[in-house]
Image (tube, rainbow, N blue to C red; front, side, top):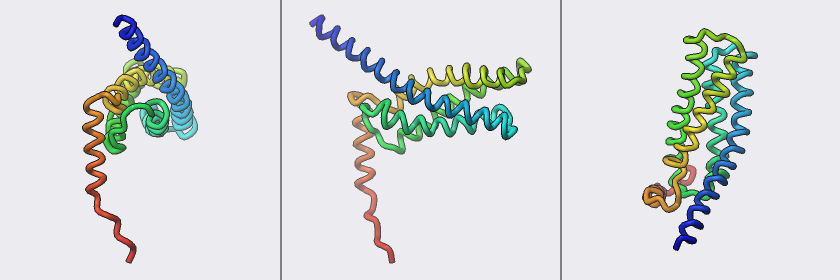
Length: 172
């Protein structure tokens, strides 16, 4: 029995490492997109710190949703695009709030005004803290484990909803 427990713990640990690695690859690409767009917005287009970070986060989060849904967490239960994407947007809004909070403190509380401060506060500290939150939240609420009882419930509701849609009517 101890062997089975050890094997089960090992496989859960391996799954966690596997998910973290894929999440990291997707996150690395999206981090590059985020930093590039935020710096272009702030440096080239003269956007304020918070505006540049908001635009860059929206673009990067969209890329992240696609990568995480179709690669990082592809083995997890599908509980409906509407449900997943709505939660994803809400959780990324919280992640954005974390990054904007870090930027706001650096800019308006500490009075920092350099490109280095912008990047450290928003793109290192803010994005780093937001990433930790998002990994935990995606696994907990967006991309459910197939054994989670809520996964079956949401999948059944989504299937029933799609069956109840009216048939498309031909063009007149």
